[in-house]
Length: 99
Image 1 (cartoon, rainbow, N blue to C red):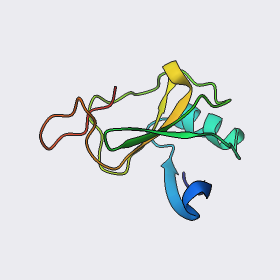
Image 2: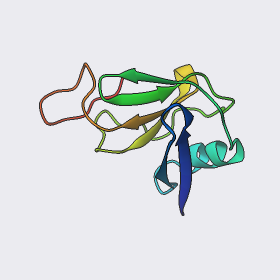
Image 3: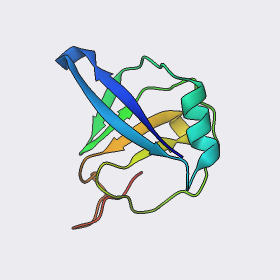
Image 4: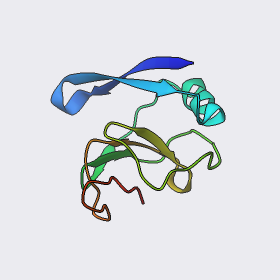
C-alpha cells in the first residue's frame, strides 16, 4: 500500500507531499502512520533532513546501505524520520549512503 502524507515546514511556510510505501517495510510504515501527526524539529546532515526523536517505535526492517533520491527512511537508533534529497557526508560519488 502506498500512502501520501504531508510534511509541513512551518518555519518556511512550505508543505511537501511524501509517499510512504509499505512493500519493503510494512511494520515501519504502520508505526509511522499510527503516530501521525508528529511535530518535531528538523536537522540537516549533508543533503539529508532528519527529525529529532519521535514517538515512533520500530525495529530495523530491511535496512538498505544505499538509498535513492527522495527516499524516506526510519532511523531506529534515534527514533527519527529521514528524507534524502542528495548525498550525505559519507556518500560515495553517485550513491546516497545513510548513517
